[in-house]
Length: 128
Image 1 (tube, rainbow, N blue to C red):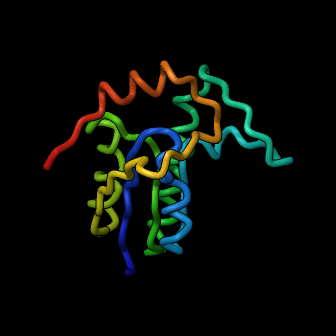
Image 2 (image 1 turned 135 degrees about the horizontal axis):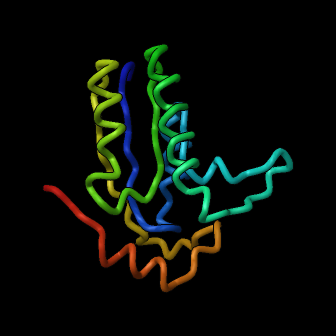
């Protein structure tokens, strides 16, 4: 499984983070940026760009060692994955984009309001 990148897509609560952990590879997600040293999640919408840049930087660093990696973000729009596809090409990685469905009734652990989840659901792009 060397040089493999998993892009795990789905709505909040679908189980993206759980799947990433089950894959047993190095995992990153933008939400990690908002977790403090005490393990508390403190989302700040004004810092969302910083969070995604942090995630991309960590993935690039990990890829520089040839380590398999998973990114578990919502990725509701195709363009949101572009930076990761570019990194995969740069470092010679094979990419698997996986959509994680919430068929188990999971709840999002970050408290994303239902109306925001609905907006994400309505804008979710799929390329088959």
